[in-house]
Image 1 (cartoon, helix red, strand yellow):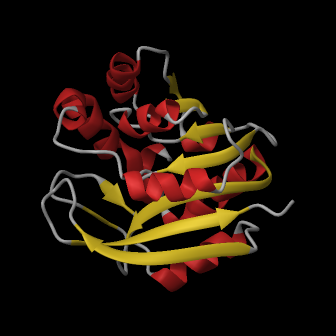
Image 2 (image 1 turned 135 degrees about the horizontal axis):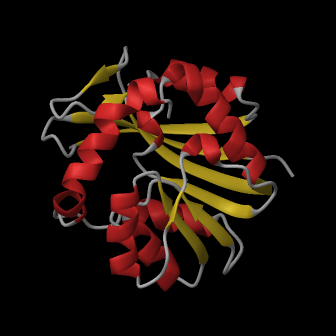
Length: 200
C-alpha cells in the first residue's frame, strides 16, 4: 500500500515480526479446505500476506503448488524459517503476474490497503488468476478507515462497500459471508470473508 498509509503498519510488522509470527494461531482449516476444494488438484496458489507461513504450510501439505509472499521482509523471513523455503517479498501494488494461478489466498492482509487503492489491487489479483481462478480474502468490517491500538491501518469496509469495490475492479461473481471472531489486538471483530471467481 502507499507509503502515506503504510509507515506505521510496516513499522509494526518490522519491529514485532518474531512475536507476531510466534503468537498462538492455527491455520483456518475449514475455510482453507473450502477454498482448496474449488481448485484443481495440485493447482498453483499464490498466498498474499502469508505472515508466519502457517496457511502456506497447510496448503503445501495438501499437495498444492504454493507461492508464499509477504509485503514485510521481516515476516517473509519468519515464514521462510517455518516453511524451509524462500518467501518472496511482494507488495500488493507490485503484483504483475498474468493468468498464472488457480487460486489466491489473502487472509487478513488486503484489509491494510486504503479504500482508494483497493480496486486497483483487486484488479491486479484478477489479472493474476487464470480463468475460473478463485480469490479468498478476509476483511475486518466497519464503516470508516482507522488505525488499531498498535497504529496499524485498516480499511474497515462494510459489506456493501466491499461489494462495490470488487465490482469496480471487474469481479462479476463475489460471495461474502460474515462471522464474528477475534483479532490480534484482542478486540471483538466482525469479519467479512470473500470468495470471488474470475470467469473462464
